[in-house]
Length: 457
Image (cartoon, rainbow, N blue to C red; front, side, top):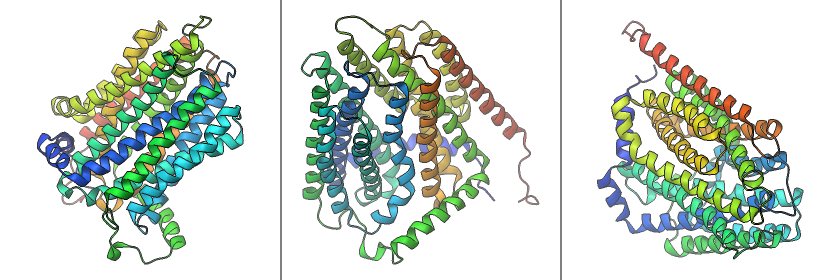
């Protein structure tokens, strides 16, 4: 039988994520601080690398890429996370993770060079896509390796707090990379040409190199695992096939736990709509706001950098308020309120098509998005048995990124070239309202169901 759903249990997980005592304890560990520093250098570089890619596609006056090309670029950035994720553990459980993490970023530092060269000469064809794909795909391997290494440097009882701190700090550093790139352009220190964006991309190689060398020099061999007795004895191909079969079993396990399945459907619905809005905002800032002015590109990049920081601030606020809001309203009711609030915010702050209002909307959207992610993650952790959690979270990762790409492509096919569409925004607001109504209805139906008895158990 599936374990009984318990909102207090989920809320307790959320409370542990921000436990101040645990936070001080894990920051006191030298090896954790080193592993966190490795992550921060790498994700800061991710921000620089992806800013260079996005700038060359969206903010290059000499090239106005189509919305479909932009959506395709996002697919290159996001889909490797989804497609490779479940199979990465096959290799991370066999290789010394210290070497694997160091090599991953050292290889990325080298692979940035051809990407820079292609941006420099203005080649954004298949070779450019392949170079970006390789750098991003290795990032998935690197992040999974960090997660697998964390239990080696943090006590098991403090892993939730350590994960929350690492992922939040990494996201902030990634946002800083994006924002600092926009600031360089806005200050006219970097020109909005293919050469300028190539320079921004090249900075990422320095960060990747620093992260790789720091990993290699900070830990002794075997410190990050796996231990010799933990390494699998079956062959690699057998392990890959076993992972594929395990994903099918994970789907079946998920289907037997309606609260977890609903949480994943919620993630899919939200990310689809979020993907649509992402492309709309990018098009608005690159082609609508300030269009025709002398410094249009620089001002657009600076404003978009502010949106990135507003989004990062929203995610940080969500980490602070979600535990208290979940205790006050209950996790499911809080999610319903967030979805309804997004629908209202899109109409109230989006329809005027004024840049400062969209800045506020971005912050509110990311408060809601991060808050939902925290609750969904805790729900999946609580509802699913330990033997299946890895597979369930791999499935969730696939949904998280895959449906966002679908939203991006729908936006590319339906939005005008400058992204300004009142009909589209109203449609997205209705989508969030329907998602809120569905989730609230599912919650009412669940409460109306009779509690299981010994006979039904």
